[in-house]
Image 1 (cartoon, rainbow, N blue to C red):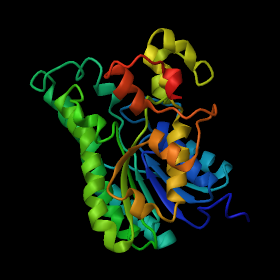
Image 2: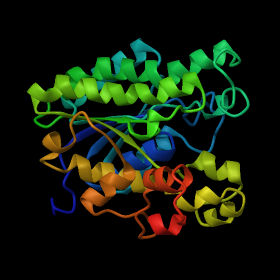
Image 3: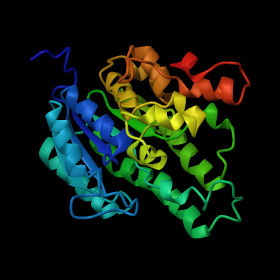
Image 4: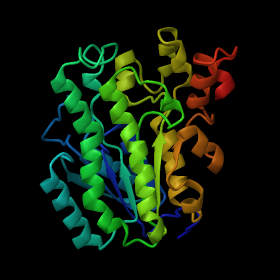
Length: 311
């Protein structure tokens, strides 16, 4: 077997929140690199989560991991339930004895944002919606890290990835609503703190963000497909910088295979664009979009440039 082509052969990964979007893509790319990947989420072929989408399931994600060359294992898990996450950890322990890569890509709160949250002051936001955002975006991450990190530190090169929206630098701007702002900054601080805790184990904790992500939900919202996504640019010009979920996934897989990553990335906040430059990966169309730089310099900075200049 060509271990250069499949550098994660023998590695055990878990992607929490792998039903769709960047979580699914990361699971598949880790499998393509040879890893055994546990994929978790709430939507199964027999049960639909509050997100309300029936077209993506964790069983399908596991099948895609295996088809890519890895071993996909679907474990239905509500990461807000400590008992379910504890059972997940016990299963991984029983079957593998350790964990090498933990990706915390839990969210599922998009349905709460438009109308209920964005554009509203914190006191105008329904409290139940605000607290649910914090549960989905913060509490789920904390529970998952607390119960799975004991397995991760058994690895000879632990990697913990917190997936969020925005880098630490980008999120110096207020993210439109207090609850959303808290939810998307918390994983950045988690990665910073866990980086300190993982140092003695030779580990890496890093927060990563995609750019303008062409997730299944985003494509559906615009009424386009991955093949026709550019048709949405007429409606939303900034969608021209959009990236596929595979872009972040390829970058994270390269990060996972980097033996020197601890010194380079531990405790940091980074983006798909920065990781892609560092590891020489591209999106599915061969481009290398840098949405963070585009928004910083063009959208907010007023620079006279187009999205094509940042692809």
